[in-house]
Length: 181
Image 1 (cartoon, helix red, strand yellow):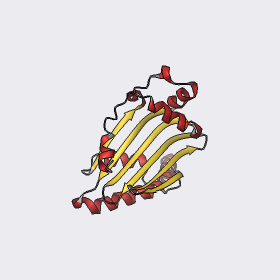
Image 2 (cartoon, rainbow, N blue to C red; image 1 turned 120 degrees about the vertical axis):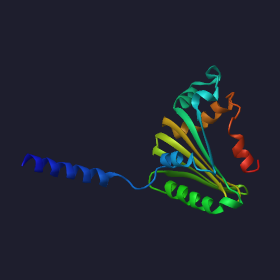
Image 3 (spheres, rainbow, N blue to C red; image 1 turned 180 degrees about the horizontal axis):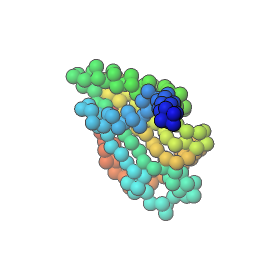
Image 4 (cartoon, rainbow, N blue to C red; image 1 turned 180 degrees about the vertical axis):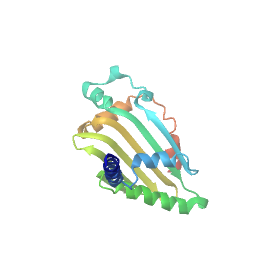
């Protein structure tokens, strides 16, 4: 009797855990899965690698910088042989970003391509900012800015702090090359 009861509870537990799992891909999982694919290039930049002289920052800039952990960058460079893969991957990214997890802050359309800025988290405590740019001829760039309780009001302070960085843009040249800048 105890064995049957235990099996029933175990079966119910398994059902609840399976039901609570999402089949939808997360952006983090997409990054991990794509890193090894042939047409992708990826790199991470930790906050420490930015070489920001904190002595030159005011209090608000220091606060904004302390909320930053790292940047994850994923690039798909399109060419004639991978056009189908590009469309598939772009559709996957669009689906993930349009899920209810991300809040869109801005969309842009320029001669260089389309882009969007989204965030994940609460309005006053953002955990992730996502920049996505796509060009039908050249490919796409997906950048995750990860942090702890980043404040949207401090984003401009963070940009100003980054301007004081000694970071030479290692890896970022690929982005500008891809979009012809």
